[in-house]
Image 1 (cartoon, helix red, strand yellow):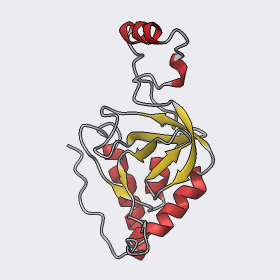
Image 2 (tube, helix red, strand yellow; image 1 turned 90 degrees about the horizontal axis):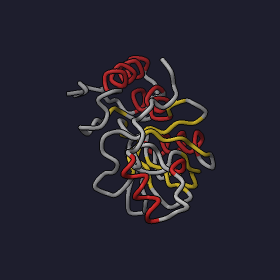
Image 3 (cartoon, rainbow, N blue to C red; image 1 turned 120 degrees about the horizontal axis):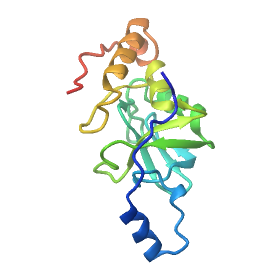
Length: 178
């Protein structure tokens, strides 16, 4: 199985013509084919195990994984394994330019972009899940194409007791891929 982002149909001629009409210097290559957001960007901040900030200020929430929460103030306490998941995400992507693949819906209710994040051809969402730094979370309609694969990866991580599965005494439970 390839680790490269799958191809997405190119944007329509109407989008291209509209872009040119509004801005003759419009460069389509800077935007992903389905125009959710950038095709690649530099990560300048890691907020937690599943969310990063780009140099443009855009926040990106990784599709199909949910990492334990981290404390964002002194009044809060991090979830079990939240700080470790955030640290691993930071080690993987902080300061690096990543590639993005979008799904059906572009953003969530918090206006964060939703994407599969790649570094050097490897999907970071999958890597974090393999290492037990999160659990599968599918919010339909996104994730249909990878859900069964991610559910199997999560089960393997739980069976091996890696990451949160070995430290937090949790069981992965069933993943709903419908």
